[in-house]
Length: 138
Image (cartoon, rainbow, N blue to C red; front, side, top):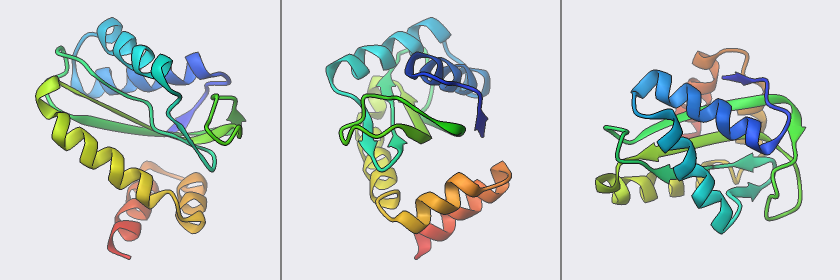
């Protein structure tokens, strides 16, 4: 969950590597898919949050990884603010419907300042996951 990245390309590379290490697939293909999507429009949605995403035929199932940086990362966000809270969504073309649902759900959850604060301050991956589940319930 903690991220070392200090810039946008580094954040994307770090998240893609985590996802591929966990879920499989080709790092290069997954990275290029996310970069292509990012070139269309920044996935920095505002409030210090980015949700980079893409579709890759080398990734078997829709997967999500998250991370938090110690210091804010410039990310060309829609509100111009740097980002500390990242969610990467990647899956095959066949998961497009589920992909949109996950993206929408994350965007809705992180609109709430208290949820963002709990996620950024989570000390462990378990704390982060628990904060997401509690936000989902509430």
